[in-house]
Amino acid sequence: MSLIEFYARNGREALGLLGQHLVLVGISTAVALAIGVPLGIALTRRPAWRRPVLGTANVFQTIPSLALFGFLIPLPLLGGIGARTAIAALVVYALLPIIRNTYTGVIGVDAAVVEAGRGMGMTDGELLRLVELPLAVPVILAGVRIAVVVGVGTATIAAAIGAGGLGVYIFRGVATVNDTLILAGALPAAVLALAADAGLGALERRLSRR
Amino acid sequence: MSPTATRRWCRATRVAVLLVSLVPACRRGDRIVVGAKNFTESDLLAELVAQQIERRTALTVERRLHLGGTFVCHQAIVAGEIDAYVEYTGTAFTAVLQHVPVQDPDSVWRAVAAEYLERFGLVWLPPFGFNNTFAIAVRRADAEREGLRTIADLARVAPRWRAGFGYEFLERADGFPGLARTYGLRFAAPPTAMELGLTYRALADGRVDVIAGNSTDGLIPALDLVVLEDDRRYFPPYHAAPVVRRAVLLRHPEVERALAELAGRLSDAEMRRLNARADVERQDLAVIARDWLAEHVPTP
Image 1 (cartoon, rainbow over the protein chains, first blue to last red):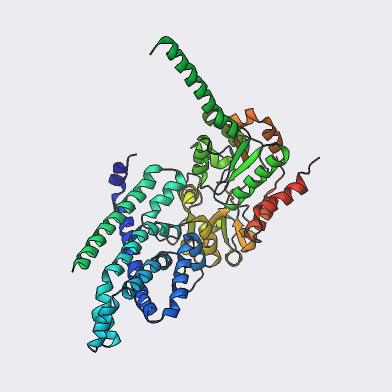
Image 2 (image 1 turned 120 degrees about the vertical axis):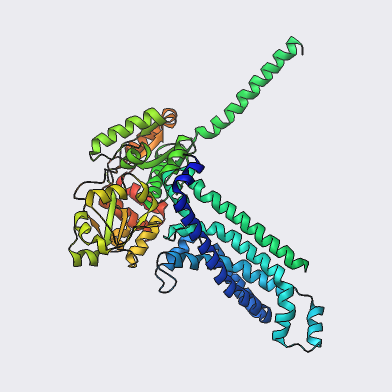
């Protein structure tokens, strides 16, 4: 059966899985942003935290997804089986690029510019809001871009814990050696990753030109 | 080009071709690659096979364990990427050869051995002895409370229960679809599709109520699970045996002799015990295999 035939016959299911996939990546990226950006900023204010925090995020990155699921299942709030657990794992994987780029972006703002702001009598909060963050946005966005592109690929493992997504076709295809089925999951995931990369790339360019 | 030069060229080419063709032959001749599927028992049996070959022959054994599911190993051995791996008769019969499941162990064995040789050039050596069928497992407390002994009993409570199954079990002809038909199983929700290893955890942790594991799995006693009896004999026999490329056995008949010593030596309980040493006690596969071989297949 060709891929086109497969989609023609299973279009509704495929769209459903694609939707689940988008939701998994969207929610996990949003949560990772909500945690990662403030944490990255905090690291620029508390240099002593840098090593332990980035070290921890690094270590998380190296935990194989199945092992991570194994740890997560018994946990009361994040755990169990299904979308919640998958999102928790995806957040863990998305954190590192976001924290690291936020830190790098903010710390990399020209010291002279910061001094000028301070000279104008800005408070720490104003300095962050009006000077450092706007100048750091392109770098932060580059981190988000990495997190999203990697996340689109990683989200295929959500199917290992009953959370659906395009990975369902990949797992099913691998279990029955059906190449069409594997491609039916892998191909849209790849296209999705490329599209996200191009979209965020364009946004990044527009913001850095300003 | 003059005739002499052409002849010289031809001879040089022939010598070069001969030399090039000898290189892989030399390299592969004294090496045998043993593969395994992606679960403990397959890894463990592959380690037993590998060590037995190492003990009894002069061959070097390369281990390619934990490769993937049935089809990955099958494709690897057909392509000659691996020379041997341990397969189960029922899996080969239904999943690889695409036959309708049959319950009689002897006819399954005969069909599998004959068709593998004819279609793939693969030889089934004598089986280890145990039968690793699918095991429909539930928590002991649930089984006792509901008085569950067989899968038919399960059908009674299933509408209130949740199931978590691996992708292979959900997709295979001898997996869930046929089981559901045979026993009239209907769960509260469609079974959750999960990675097989995670289903045990989900069951032990109360996230699902029924899983399909393997009957020789060491986690069954360790997690205090109960295997429900397949009273309608739905699952076909799954006897494990080494599958080896015929080309390898022709070149190295000593491999066949070495592996024949393992035939019939492993009972269901023995296999479950070995699996428990690996999965529950976290012992090294190589150590488990060495101990077992030293005890049960002593060097004369």
